[in-house]
Amino acid sequence: MTVADRNGKQAQRKAAMAVLAHSDALEIARCLEPIAVPAYENLREPENGLVMLRGRIGGDGAPFNLGEATVSRAAVRLATGEVGFGYVLGRDRRKAQMIALCDALLQSDEFAEAIEKGVLAPLRSAMISERDRAAAETAATRVDFYTLVRGEG
Amino acid sequence: MYVAVKGGERAIENAHRLLAHERRGDRDVPELSLDQISEQLSLGVDRVMTEGSLYDRELASLALKQARGDMIEAIFLVRAFRATLPRFGATEPVDTGTMRVRRRISSTFKDIPGGQILGPTFDYTHRLLDPQLAEDSKAEAPATAEASNATMPRVTDILGRDGLIEPSPLADAGSPVGDLTREPLGFPADRDLRLQNLARADEGFLLALGYSTQRGYGRSHPFAGEIRLGEVEVEFMAEDVGFAVPLGAVTLTECQMVNQFKGSATEAPCFTRGYGLAFGQSERKTMSMALVDRSLRARELGEEIIAPAQDEEFVMSHSDNVQATGFVEHLKLPHYVDFQSELGLLRQLRKEFSEAAAETPEPMQEAAE
Image (cartoon, rainbow over all chains, first blue to last red; front, side):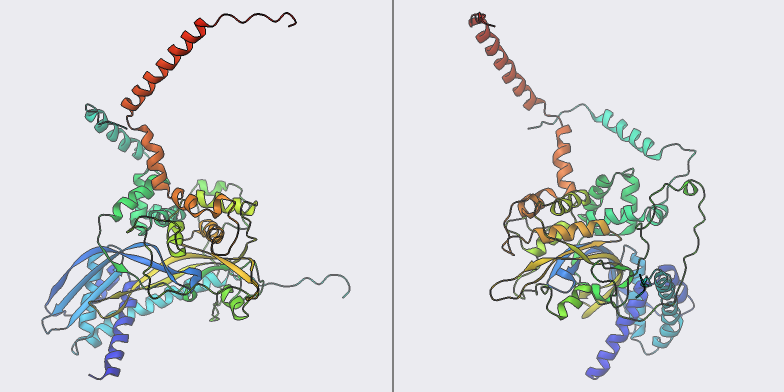
């Protein structure tokens, strides 16, 4: 695999993780259901923990510790060897495991397309339409200033 | 000094049972669900997350329910929970410039790129109690409008282009980010530690201190350069994965306070800044935080330290409501031995006083009186 291939694959995995992290666990499970998931083992038992969330002084300066957040993580290995990782905010260990499974399947030539079409595509479009709805509601509260002209000019 | 006293076990057990009973209230009234708290008392949940220093809406809702709505008790519960989980590491610093904005206002410029966006705010409401909310309320669906793709630069970035405002301090590659949950607080404290302390500080305490600066106790001439609320993506550099993993998004409120100038013989005068950042929709908190952040920069900016809000030891040592409530409320614990010794001393003093009084002859009446 060339460096460009590897970077491309990494970007694809990262984009998939972003969609999955934003999606409801029940929805991910529903999308995975029709896919004949191959055998896999837990490389890391799903677990809960914390991360320290960092901000930047002034928004763009040196980092500082804002406060912690709960996270879940898991790692799985398919029988064919692909290793997938799941990290997500919150305490839903099963969600982390499903993300890890999707990450592993995405790296398998046999399952990548099924995951893209059956899981990522519907979840991505649900995420985008939810964001569009919020953006439209927000846009309605934008102030349109107009100037009152006083006197006779 | 307080001592262990045996014998209260049954009373304590029954007191806890009574507490659970009172927490539940009238059984004919439906019990609150965590979803109801999270969805309908969301600003209370945001405050518990911010001051509990833990982003987890469900846990903060549970804490509020368990604490019967007592904010500080709920914050205490969340802080205690933190200690039960391992920390995997620190996230990449979030970029508030890429926030999916739901509210964004500036009191310094009317026409800012991206516009003034009011979002869900109490501002401009009449503060009249709404009797309709006492019954089943039917909230209207929100209005919608076409969203623009215009970027929303921070107001401070716009001022920064012309050099009118000081730049944010850059990271010092050699020094780690200070963490007051890992090392005891020492003074003087750098700005990263101060901001961490202020971020988890009691909102009421910061509000009062911020207000005091406006009234002249460490005046800093502030303008709300920008306040923004929205969702920010979080990434975590996971060593096992080998790249920064997206964890999802958190809701944050950010306040950029623009304050009066500094300058010197060698540097042109420019605006100075105060910064506030908090979990959820926490506008009053971030505004107060930004005011106090700026006033605590007195030492760095060569300003005379004359007011409480400029004194970092005073502010940082008293800002944490869990610590404060611990020390105030520990007065409820048995202090029987301490008190017995005080009582003995007082009795001795009173005895000496009355003996001295008995020995002194009655003063003579002055004839002229």
